[in-house]
Image (cartoon, rainbow, N blue to C red):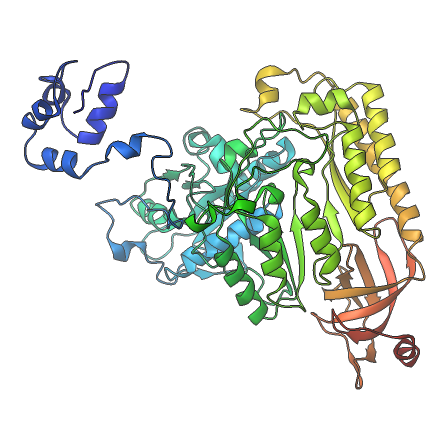
Length: 588
């Protein structure tokens, strides 16, 4: 027996569920009313909605202990839009991608959805019927760049003649900035026709159809389940020998500076089987290297199969690295990242596997030993430090100290002596002093990173820092510290790279170098370092031939800069192949 009571705005919630006027719902509904009384006050369609509507279990958290396999998100229907209106009918789409690797993968998901509806893709913005800008909101500089791009696109739209049927070019923004600014982009700036958040890409055909009637359209709803597990991305560059595979979405870490939990939602993981299927497809297409993507890949947890809930060795909570903590409740159950990495690396022994980005707090030894064991899992780890000062780390809510971070680095290098470590740093975070900055510089000197990404801090709305901290470091100080950190890293990198001269590295060739003079080729070694080699004929084990994209090439490092290795290609090989001294002499 149920009783509905009008407290706060509960009446509006009930009216939304029943879709009937307030007077009809609450005329007989008092604190002592029975469910029969409510039922009697409803007739026809309203009664059917109650009978077929949500049951009690929908209002009780975790009421269903058997979680089903994640299903496709249901796109809201619009009665005025017919199925044929959702079709692209050959209309061309131009993608303008900004931001991280996750945005590249998101664009491929969006393109897959539109491609399935009959849209085509163009590489010329002037020929596009639809222009979709994949945006980034992690820093103010990234947003400023996108605002300028939107104004430029709007000018193109105004100058262009109308398309067939009197339709103008449509402009839409996707991704994190779309979710963060929402209606401001449509109503205040009036620069776009469509705003689509990271969890709403399935709705793109409907949003585009809505704009055909000269309306703007927006969907920025975040989901607790959407992983696009059943959407097979269509690669933007079909000839590329590298690809990105998203394994999870969202983040639960809630670092003080980070807007990702508010633009991409809570953490949820794709089922392992769907990831493996995508990797197999990429292998069949000739891809030689994939990067598994997630905001925190080490907290990956596939909860889609109920038979894993009761497995003893999987039911224990996650164990954090020594000296690390987290602000959210430790999770348990499911299939973890080491199992995913094991299965993915077993798909194709000639395909390299990378992953980014892990949070240092939960870095299990199982992952480290798996990297050591498997030749095709790259010997590279991204360990974002963000700062070298304990007070700043505490303000950032990172969950570790400099001492515990050092301890983790030592552990990693004990198991993987030749690992290439990369990191992220923020310069000028709230309350950062000159002493704190100097300690960050010291950390960079001590750890000896192979690659480093650093940025001046920019306050983001909705974050913990925005509500609780003061952005008290002047912009000119942030800029100066950023330049000093970047300069220090380049000096340290030159020392690091110089020690590699004379060594042999297996380089995956990705194509011509940036000069595009067809005389030099570009690739990366196992540690992820960029390598440039001349485009010449070399021995492939049976005869001499020119190097091609996708070849693994044994390369001797001859000279370096602070950002690139340069080498002499000696022989085309296999990833798991063994090249002995005699073969190298033959190649020379």
